[in-house]
Image 1 (spheres, rainbow, N blue to C red):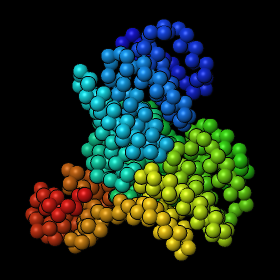
Image 2 (image 1 turned 135 degrees about the vertical axis):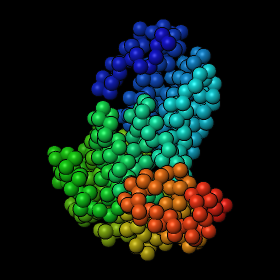
Image 3 (image 1 turned 60 degrees about the horizontal axis):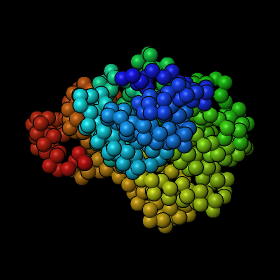
Image 4 (image 1 turned 120 degrees about the horizontal axis):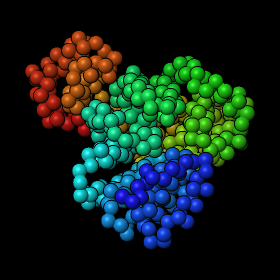
Amino acid sequence: LLHGWEDFDIGAPDLDADYAILTELGAGDDLGRGSFYNAVLEVYIRTHRFAEADHAATLAMAHYARTDVPILSFYIALHRAMLRMLQGDPADSARFLRDARAHLSAVRFESPGDARLLSLLAACIDYERGRSDALMRFLSMDLDDLFQGELWPSLAEMVIAYGAQALSEHRSTMAARGFLDRWRVLQERALQFRLMIDTREVAVLQNANRWIEAGTRAMALSPDTTADGLIAQGADLARLTDRDAIALAVLWLRQITHDTPRREGLPEALDGILGNPRLTYRQRLAAELWRAEVLRRRKRPGEARAQALRALETAARLDAIASVSDERATLDSLTTNRRIRDALDGSAPVRRLLRRVQEARHGRLRRGRAHGLTRQETRILHGLGEGVTNKAIANAMGLSEATVKFHLRNLYAKLGCATRAEAVRSATELRLFH
């Protein structure tokens, strides 16, 4: 290619000045102009400038549509699908993913790495909408290959968040932390993704109700960031522009909401972060639910009900199952109030949403229990279905191989099987993998 997007050295600090590059490209240079907007698009997504990203994607696609290079159109469609996920719209993301799949099918050479990215994003979309099988299968079978290839920062942000959440919910906190540790060992990438990985680990600990450990880890991440300092920023949180600074603020606000929900200045700080246009949808939903919890703890139940209902009705409209589930600690606390619970149950969309959140979180375990399987046996069975070795199952669950073998013997007896293959076949017939 005369102009690949890699040829443009574009960075966030002076992005507006980089537009001068366009004056060096001819009006009919669709490949060059499309590649410029392609490069700009990734920077905009990485810095959470969503409106500008959408505009750059539209321009890039318009230029690439006039070329005969479908792989470039594939990249734009894939970026647009990621963008919609960051904005909390998995349905629209799936639409762009279909476009990406069509462009990739038109590519006249094998591109297994790009096909893998497509599968990963499809799995993340499924997970957001309450279906976990594809993402768990990807994490078990394709993660090593993913690490070997090129991974854009915007996609890395997504897989770190969804991968850690999926492993935490469907396996264990230890499995989620092990997944994050695998990212850390990639030294070159770890420098770029370090804070992203570390903040996600704190969120995993918070969701596991390990709040003291989470608070200790949060303080170690950025000694200059303290709860007092964050609260003091108040309305200024709306003006944060750095992605990592926003992530740290969000992490601390979750911790403060749990530890000291009546803390002076906390409502103003939550209002400040909610006024920040660079929040992802997940971050915005979380802050809205924390605000509802703070209102509840301050004996303002009517406002708390209205706040929670607004947030969850939007989540229901967007089909944002995983985003709601990721705030289960706050949601569980909110619904201890009977009036708030009644208000949520009174909205049919929210009632269906909360039921789907519960089903996504516990559906496999419930189906396993219906056939006499324990929680550990159900999780091991799903490891068999993914083709995972006893050693890998033991590592993921924090057990010894001998303990895994003990559970396998009981599992085989309950399913009337003698081998792994027979157990998988029996589980498939009983619909235990769905």
